[in-house]
Length: 315
Ligand SMILES: NC(=O)c1ccc[n+]([C@@H]2O[C@H](COP(=O)([O-])OP(=O)(O)OC[C@H]3O[C@@H](n4cnc5c(N)ncnc54)[C@H](O)[C@@H]3O)[C@@H](O)[C@H]2O)c1
Image 1: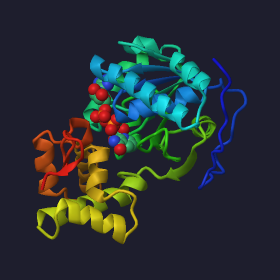
Image 2: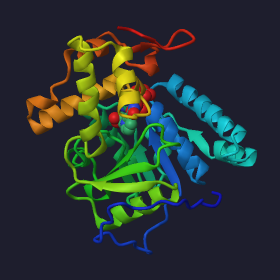
Image 3: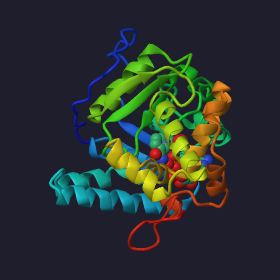
């Protein structure tokens, strides 16, 4: 492996009870499960920081699409002078693919970034753990699901942690870190060092539904969908209002399409069920879009239709 490039990571909420243990093995090889928007972005940033990466997805086409997207995005970074051509080539050479979890046998850290469904994630952990080194850390990129509950489906709750990268992972500065009830201090310290080595800033959240960023962001998006559902404004009016009136870089419906409407709905369901408060009930219109398979950018239709030259509102 080439040099790990240490970035300018900074911790917002330092946790004094998380010592760095020099005795533990360094993290060098990273497994990524799920090669969707997040898995590909995480593989991108991790490979550029000098780590070896091995990726897996149920769907081979997703892996191929992810490798192509990583290549395209790195080519764009070269064109804008953010990285050199040599960086791009070295990073791409560090990424490999595995069809089975046996390919994670030498990974020091495996980051699960599969579909936001608890049953999917639990099955992955049950199948994955027997192949891992005893001291390997397992992390989940879940946006909302309980870390303690997911950890319980592994053989290593003490070496399990939530590492919530933001979308797009190569660009966004923050990674939320969430301990489960059993997460050991050494695991937390190793994970924090790893995130900081990517040049990211960490913010530590307690293990409550949707953590911090999505606890705040998703009810706003859901409210924007209610605003549309109740006919208060059109897609265009709502997004324009929030872009120009609240200085948000993206309108809430545009952002929902970017996140994925299935992911938005899953997060709202976790908030609704986990906090048992009707203020989190998912908007029926969001449910309808998901049932239609209109999941946003990734399926080329959501609150906007992306099949033409320019996104067109669908309502
Ligand atoms: N989209 C966002 O903005 C965002 C941001 C932060 C975190 N997340 C979280 O990241 C995770 C992935 O989200 P995404 O947006 O990349 O979704 P996505 O739909 O783009 O990708 C999910 C991928 O997981 C794969 N998958 C499903 N089951 C699998 C299995 N058993 N084994 C291997 N691969 C499997 C799917 O084939 C798909 O390629 C979710 O937990 C989500 O909540 C999403």
